[in-house]
Length: 103
Image (cartoon, rainbow, N blue to C red; front, side):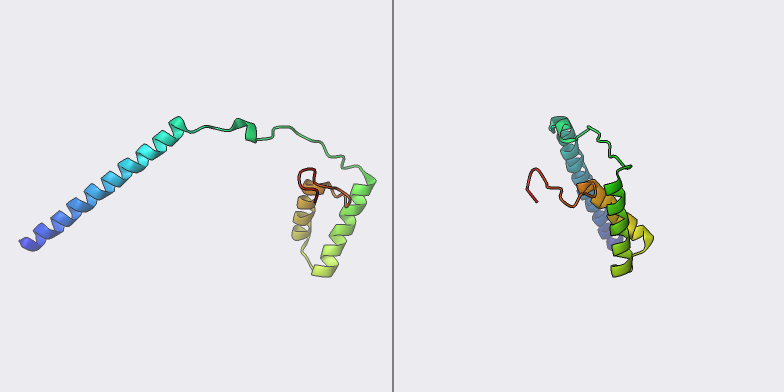
C-alpha cells in the first residue's frame, strides 16, 4: 500500500509543479503582450520596382548564371537562388554601394 501512496504523491507533486510553471509562463506571455511595444516603424512597406528590361541587368544575370554553372557546377535552382539574392542586394549592379556601410 505504501508503494501506491508514494506513486500518488509523486504524481501529485508533478502536477503541482507543472501547473505552477504553466501559470508563471502564461503570466509572462500575458504581461509581454499587454505591456510590450510593437514597433510598426521597423517594417519598410515601400515598394521598389526593378527595371527587368535593362540590358545591363539582363547581361549581368546571364554572366553570373554562366559563371556559377561552369565554375562551381551549380544546379539551375542554385544559380537562380544566387541571382535572386544578388538582385535583391545590388540589382545586379557590380558598382552598387551600400549607403549605410559603404560596402
